[in-house]
Image (cartoon, rainbow, N blue to C red; front, side, top):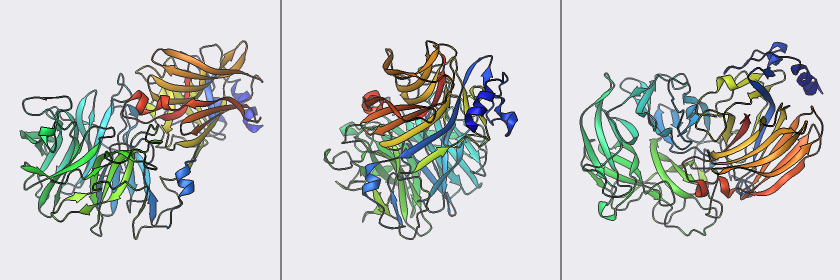
Length: 572
């Protein structure tokens, strides 16, 4: 009743405040309801609860065990660095804002997101880029010679750049662009003699001879002048064996271990043939010789009918613990029945083993990537980034939590946060989620095959174009929209399938009650989705069931991201 009275009170107010930091608390903050620019939808809360069978059927056997993936859902291209007993990890974000989430850990098992590296528009220009463009493969490094952290990456719409900071818990610099570094996936290597290098994917000398023919190049970097200099040397042509026409050598990282230099790269593309390979040399500038037992990580040759399969494993980065152990973070996928998934490429963690001839490897032959791993001496926290966790946001804070994202821009003018009680208020924007712009969409990653997501929405559309609700988005052309809209003087709830050839209504029901809030629920069963709604505090009613989840999968839509879910409002 308190919520309803507050909502009715809001309807009498014609002023509106929209800002990134939200409005102040108290009665004043509840003045955000109407705007001369369009109607506003108020979301009371957002709840997401994972319900995957694997976690329920396979409890962890002890406090020193963890589940793979350690970062479930679309956290692709992980990169890791260490300073003392502090570990920092970043992943790709493509055309979502803010860019490059950064996680911190003291033990490699217990992780917490501490922010986003690219958290302001001056660092991140994404407008006009597709969902699977934007920021590729960020690499984080610590340079002990100047006590500075670096994050270097590719913005497909602008080129290669880096940002830096002395404090990874704080702000990072504006971009320093690297016009002489072409291609994608740059990574810093800071040698113990103080010299610095950038390795990256680029065109081979003489150009590509076939589709997917790429090379790994290296160039020295002047830390003081923040520029590359000297020759750009090709370290790897094509991959491990050029005669086999290897494809998409990328994601390089260089390490110095026991006096030798190791160059580790992804190979084989981002799908089921993905793998990780390694080379060794005596100097950073080459020559690098591939290990004769490559790849050091892959799942491509395994039985596709194996239980709980892990696929697409590759794009790794290495880190050494204080006790001397080496561990690897890498990406992989968890398809349902080895057919499709909507979660994207996720971050996994496994220990490194060493061959008799001194090469590190993660898996060998037909070894499978395990879902349950033990790290002796490390105790798992009660709150983890893995397993069947629950996320509940009542929007009582003055800002959005770090895990929330928008598309391409921070959309300051399209949303506000109020408190006591809390709402996320979204304007019905003149932008659609199908456009290469910034819609009124605030979202999070899907992180489980099976989950339940609910929200409560106060919304009185003034015309047939104004709609708001929960959006499930893979890319511009593959979406489901569980929406509330106007119908003959009343309201309706609908499920729209958004495609590249138009929008199609899969189900629609009239909603009784003119001013009651509407609750919306999405139940993912892995291969299908069920959609529900309820008026006020009434019982849940089924809108439609068994809607094909394959439609939102990478297997159907392609692209590099997983699917997101969140609150959306539009009048287009």
